[in-house]
Length: 449
Ligand SMILES: Cc1ncc(COP(=O)(O)O)c(C=O)c1O
Image 1 (cartoon, protein in one colour):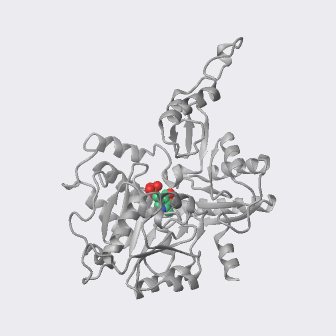
Image 2 (cartoon, rainbow, N blue to C red; image 1 turned 90 degrees about the vertical axis):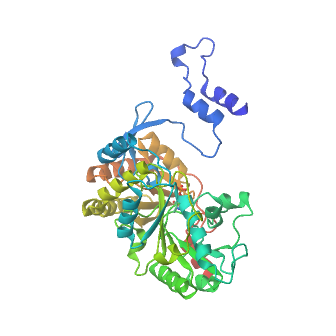
Image 3 (spheres, rainbow, N blue to C red; image 1 turned 30 degrees about the horizontal axis):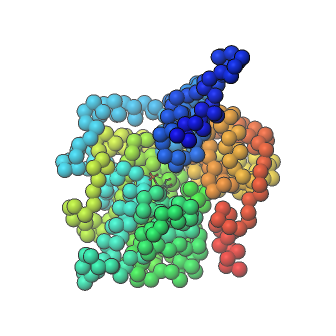
């Protein structure tokens, strides 16, 4: 097998003639197995992470990392949070899974809690964010189908609108509303009827919205796209047009929701509300769980058998989610998110004054993007070498998604490490001022001229 032979030559499992066995690189069989048996879907760092505590993660060699990525917005309470561990221990010994043919003790109460947070009274639990997206797209088609359009015919209201630079997941529905071509084009044809609007461009929104639209999907702050906040004017106009054309406004809060911005949901800063809110990532503190939250009006179109899942909403995941929400609910943690976020942005602004290759700092709460004029990947690698986890999205934006529990001292530790990383990383390739990786606001302005 080519993969196995490649890894052998890279890791040199056996000493060369004359070399002492102790000096030869020892292959990690877990890496060998991964290389040989997994689909090559990820560009992974060659380390095995074994455990974590609070805002720190440790690899198999015992090296400690300050985790400012948080499993890409999943480990919002850090690692091994005592209240989460306690619930997992307790419930794992009782019932990990109970079929959705029956009730479990936590799904109803979790739906009630999420209704209190969101003002949306009906919930469906999925296993992931992308499944929540696909489920919401199905609901939008269902809601848009008129009484004189029997099932089996193509509904008149079938178009989905989404934003340029959006990311909504990896299943077929989700990739069809994800603008980044490399995620979508290799799998065509995708779900028909999706169109992309220029970022925050109200005129483009107005020109594309009509009675054939069943839903518009928006992230209040684009995450994978590079931490770009949707404007109040754009959001409110999307709301007005959705109401006018009887379409649904779907808020993808999978990355920016559940406290990340210092509010329950990113879109709560806007004066108008969505019809559907989607959450996942941190909901069950690292166990797979997502949710579609919606109105009675949408729920009234659903009947048994139309949608479902085997694993989604199981008792263990729902019990953990209830605990997660109750930890976040205390205003103290939301306040910590806002205060630590402000400290981070203040420190980053000082670094931007010092390092001219920092182009812009964006974000809210603990969702921050540091856009560079140079490739971000070498900075991620250098940060890791120095014991700091961050990542890079859209080639030029370093993304910070630290856990909600970080302390003032950890913010200082981050800024100290990050300054060293900025000072010592060799810089590569200037970022384009237009094109796929460029700032969508700048591209939109350029297009408007
Ligand atoms: C905004 C947004 N929507 C949807 C998804 C897909 O979620 P999942 O990876 O759980 O399927 C992601 C994942 O990164 C996301 O950031």
